[in-house]
Amino acid sequence: LGKGGRIGAGQSFGGTESNDYVVVNPCGIDVQTNTISFWFQNRQLLAQRAMVSVGGSPGDTGPYLIFLHGAGSGALSLFSGNTYVSVLSATATGRWYHVAIRRDGAAVRVYVDGQLQLDTTLGSGGNPGALWWGTGYSGYLRGGLDEGRLAATARSVEWIRAEWGNVVSNAFWTGYGEVYATGRRLFVVKGCQ
Image 1 (cartoon, helix red, strand yellow):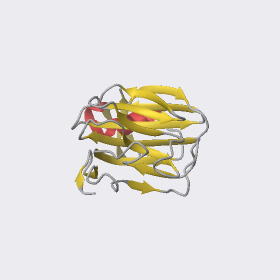
Image 2 (cartoon, helix red, strand yellow; image 1 turned 120 degrees about the vertical axis):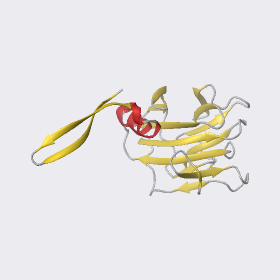
Image 3 (cartoon, helix red, strand yellow; image 1 turned 180 degrees about the horizontal axis):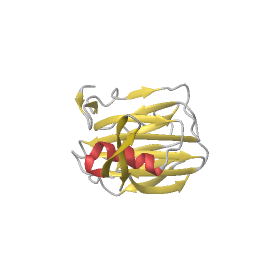
Image 4 (tube, one colour; image 1 turned 60 degrees about the vertical axis):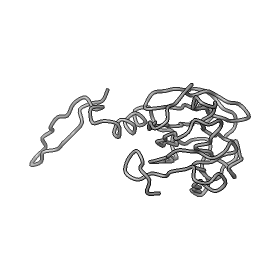
């Protein structure tokens, strides 16, 4: 902790190959309905570096694992049930990306920077367990993670876009206005892109 994140301090990974991860066990994760979101930054474009996995151990590949792979390209993929599914063909080092993985039953959607990049179906939810940040069966992340969140609901696209847009720029919101109530003056957002 204490390293530069997207918002204040974040978690930096990559110091030691065998012991550099964070595990959170929120009394068992509902693997059928949830949203996991986080910001990540690459430091090295290496093959198969896990960012986030869900399961009983870092090597548990169900219900899913999101990671960078493809030496030199920083491709972002979802892995579940022994299947790689491409999310982005490349990512750059030194740039922060926002990722949201939304699962509602078998339907899985992955958003990057507020935009839908993957809409697919996966089999059973797999093994409930812990949320593993910075590790998985495929190795340890060399980069940073920040603002990791787990919601026990499948968040809407509007929620996901607002979560991303709230951090990137105040210009994301199209306009501001004032609403007057009896004896009070309130600040409200009129709408978003």
